[in-house]
Length: 93
Image (tube, rainbow, N blue to C red; front, side, top):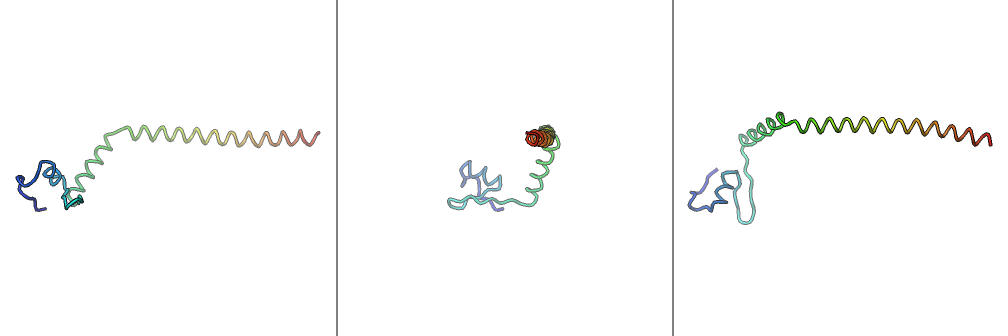
């Protein structure tokens, strides 16, 4: 990427150009090289392998899912049992 000398840039524009942004009028154009993308991917991957918050959230989600499934099955069995009981009472009346 061809960059103008720093003297022609204000500080924000220079920082944006270093980060891969080029201003074209009122639009901001993002330019990413394959190397930049691979480095960002590697940084993100390394950050996720060290961060344990996602694993903890996943464990809590699985626990909540098991609890919901257990409650659903329990209510289903209870509903069938109550239905049969009320049907027997209704038939005897």
